[in-house]
Image (cartoon, rainbow, N blue to C red):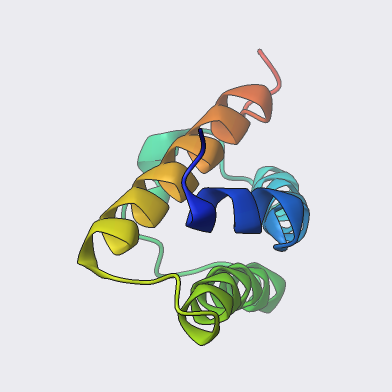
Length: 103
């Protein structure tokens, strides 16, 4: 049986929106000349659009956290599990949407 917090975010939460925002950010990074994960370690210069998309992604993740908190589905264990789930989800998307075009 799935945990209630996980059931909520996968059934009623906005995970799809988080995924879409992350994919769009990856595509914009690639279009802006970022070609490897190492390029993202310390970004000091990028188009404004990249920073805006990053902020939107962070906001969507925070909104998902707040939804769980509003419904009483939040504690330290859930916080760790939620962060781990989001991290794994985005890591899989990184592999599906690499910065390089295979060149």
